[in-house]
Length: 341
Image 1 (cartoon, one colour):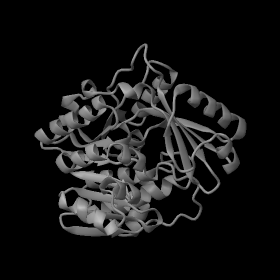
Image 2 (spheres, one colour):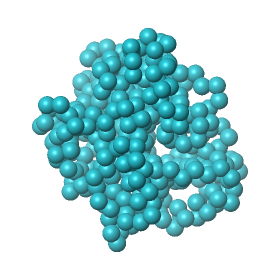
Image 3 (cartoon, one colour):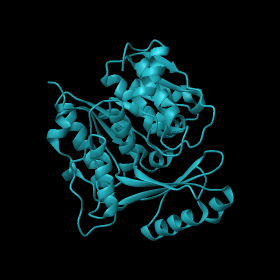
Image 4 (cartoon, one colour):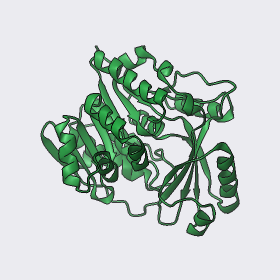
């Protein structure tokens, strides 16, 4: 049966607050460079205030890793939906509107009398490195009750964000969605999101990948962490044995996609001036998943992912600014990828 949605995302719903700051300010704020740290609401308020004091170029946009991927997918003309939790507050209203305005269905109702809507405070230093301080807010209440079986059944691929794979209820929600998708003959994808997440829940992630996941997205470090290995080749062989399709990014080295006994090495798209690496992995996944929905081969879908990642690191923010459909279409035609996008 033809799916209503090409991709359904499941992940955190939050507002991204992105600020370019110096390394000295990062140190003063006691933020570990290059990390993702979970914080309480009071700490989030303090960091947000400091951002306003030390940066003149703050952007506040709807975000969350999985939500950003769905935004990229919608920008490529592919149908998408998203499950996530927001509170009944101003940020929650802004998040919901931001998703529906770009054509992403967002069916979950806001929580009343709950923790506030989540926010991710992203400090970007002059070397374009991102350091994230995340208040999870309403997302902590996400559970099996938030999985709409009909929407999962109506989605060709259910894409799950590793950042949300934390509490027992959240883990149960992932398993529930996976089982519904598999029973309906649909595919399940997972992004590992962060090495910290993998290390905190390694056994559960391994079980999920081995038993429920058809398509795995990870970067080099996350894949090594998943299997507690130091050799990249060994980690690829390990995931290969599960039969899972693996899409692994390697920064300037591009990416590797393993599927059906084949290894596709995809070059990175050169970017003259890297501004902000926030969202590179999210948009790579958007390009790959959208490419597959368009009928591209895995190697060509990987190249579309590289194009999407290259665009997003050329400016501040985790969502595309240049219309990716136009950008990807031009580059793809030049490379002989497809006749039209």
